Image 1 (cartoon, each protein chain N blue to C red):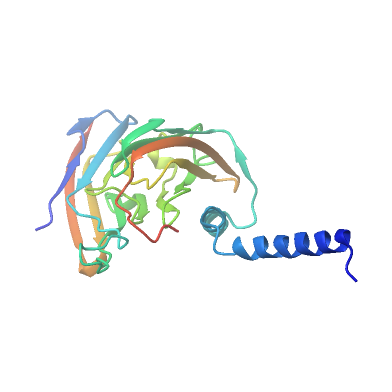
Image 2 (tube, chains in turn purple, yellow; image 1 turned 180 degrees about the vertical axis):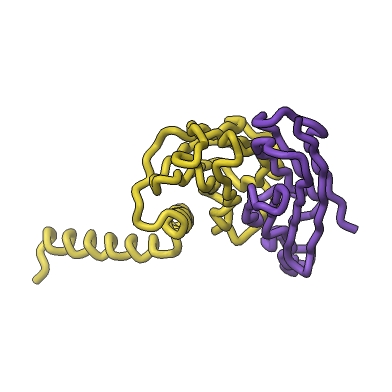
Length: 106
Length: 156
């Protein structure tokens, strides 16, 4: 089953810029490769990633076959308030995974 | 009666025509370039893309094109009035020029993004940032790829 890892600092000062690193375990089959018999391997990738902070979308991305396998996305946000960050990956063949992380802001 | 001069002119011009036909089969480099330009147009529209403000960081020599770490930093204060709305990444030689489109806003605090891409062949990698005032800025890096991301055929 799908595995994802997110790395969010557990606590931060108010107004501090924190770095969030996310990694989703996924082959990201590009749809351009062939098997040894010459049959095209169908595309199977994650197409969209969204991150929300207490329900407000702070980052999103569209991914294409040129993303490496196990897509790593690292971005920043301002720690505004304590709460939860929600991460959601969706993709081909009904792929959908969510993950959340807590942050306490002093 | 055909003079020697007429014969030479006629035979040279027919050779030239033959060469033109021989070159007609698809020029992959030109097709790729067209695909890249079309992809950029799709994102940017009619706006002008200026070089500057954006810093695309990736190794100039890539051993393995399957996983290429890259990061994009945009010089922006990231305030409500002046921030980066989106960062788009493109490659020149992949069968599809798009790599990733990221949408961010003033809450990002810093305009910085890092990820890992697949790069099929030696060529250019382009990052384009869309600012909140509607302007587009870009950075282009030329890379050399020794082991390309898995592509046996169908380049373009």
